[in-house]
Length: 293
Image (tube, rainbow, N blue to C red; front, side, top):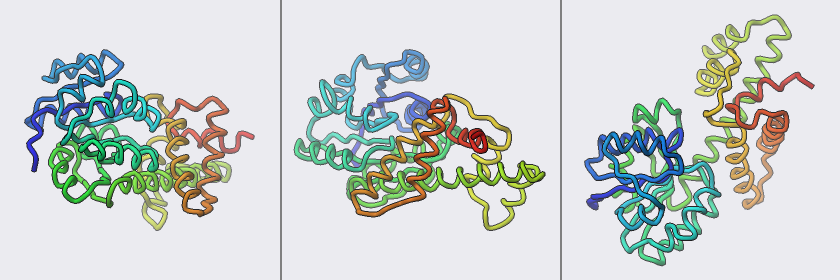
């Protein structure tokens, strides 16, 4: 395994900050960080990280760089300009922890390969609490050799790490995970709405469903903790981000010549919730809009 003496980390948001904190505590390497917000930079500096003033400084001083950014658009912003591609060196590795377009992921990997560097997609799943606890699930797209090199660092913040295949395969797997999640949460929202109208308590409904074949992670988390109590905070996984991730699934299906009608429908449902003013709210907020027409 290569000895990564300096880890760069770009993107200290809801998931990025706790992930980076685990790398600071457990990796044994020096960690240098960059974000546009000053508060997480100050917190991580207090815990032993070095703060960089630019993306270029991160690339110029790190052996391996983790990105934890909200979307493909944000990843492209740090890749271009005075960013990753311009400053990358032979042997460097970039690991993208965000959910992003598969086509863009493969394009970035190809451009880095031409410079003697590597790009691995390693999108994360599970909650902010899991990021804090270091118990995330990570789906990796990388060659067997690159996977073997980066897996020990990923295990600083994840308990389940799966090599899904070569470049892009991690993104494919994560995108489909999210597609299934969104469709399941919509089914739960519809079930709760119909139960209410028919005099069945939503909590009792989901408690009972959890004992049968309709049980799921989505039911126990998104259903019980958001839909039933009607709690849809900002600063959680928003409806806007859900629609963004779903668009990647629709892109994959379109490229493959496959019509995925359930996903197309959930896309319309998410868009309707955004149009109704719930774009920044936690995406199970779609439950609030059922039966409101």
